[in-house]
Length: 86
Image (cartoon, rainbow, N blue to C red; front, side):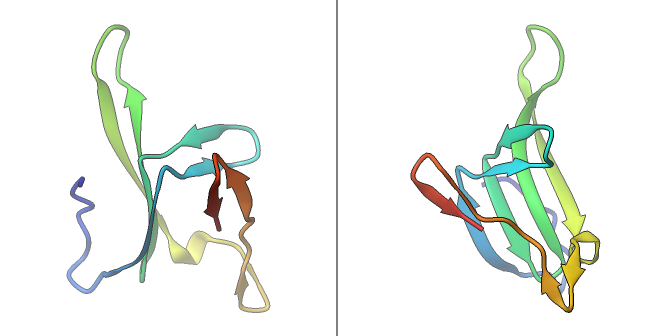
């Protein structure tokens, strides 16, 4: 497991392996998607340079940046490779 560099009071609430994420224009396959009490963390590999080893990227999004409406978080659920994601 990759070091997520969690803050002292940060805890993992949920973890999904073999997840996917989409911003509406680009889809990425993730090594893992983690929900903590402070962040939504996506972990994926990205090519660093031509003919070089892929680099592990840890992308942290503060929960405050996730859109909400009337206190309800705006997420979409979809089916990918027989895995249910939310």
